Image 1 (cartoon, helix red, strand yellow):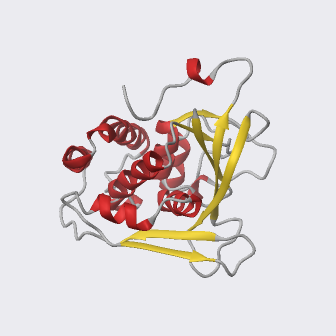
Image 2 (cartoon, one colour):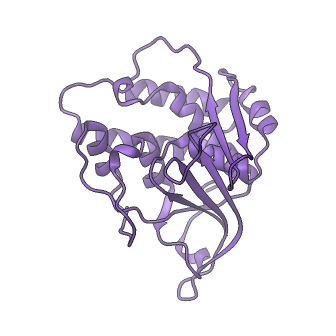
Length: 248
């Protein structure tokens, strides 16, 4: 099965992953044409940086002007409307991401902080929709995440991210602060990843790409690395062990 491996180097947002997917070959015009079919067409902000040693892509979307208070109930309602208009096959996995985020919120957040105060917005769901479009375009069937070593977190955002990433594993590198990983991105990785495994000889890598949250100064710490290829575990066939992201 065609696989995507996400390697968090330090800072991580969902839009950084989208930048990497554009860097790997998803056309901006394709995403624009698909999102235009939904009730919420948005302007995509995409920019490449070829001046640095390793080329990266920056990705963001303009706010849609959502004026209502965001709750998990309204997130599910929005996601249903977004998917059912054009891509109902995205519905189940998106609801799983929302559920993962909600479970973390209920367990960690005790003082009725709003989702907006945790930097979770309705645009987060549009980014998730664009993520599924990108994976479908690239025919990615399985997502893996390279293990990240994080602590319990100091801030509320850090504690939420640490709680959500239950399968983060461990690395031999420098630990990453959970404050650097956006809770929504953490929920996406925990929900979609079939495993947290290092990038080793089990993977046949076809392409490597990078997404950054900085237009002018992408560095190792604000850049995510994406690997696209195939997983070949000799002891257990990927066709037996893992299920597809899309489809029944």
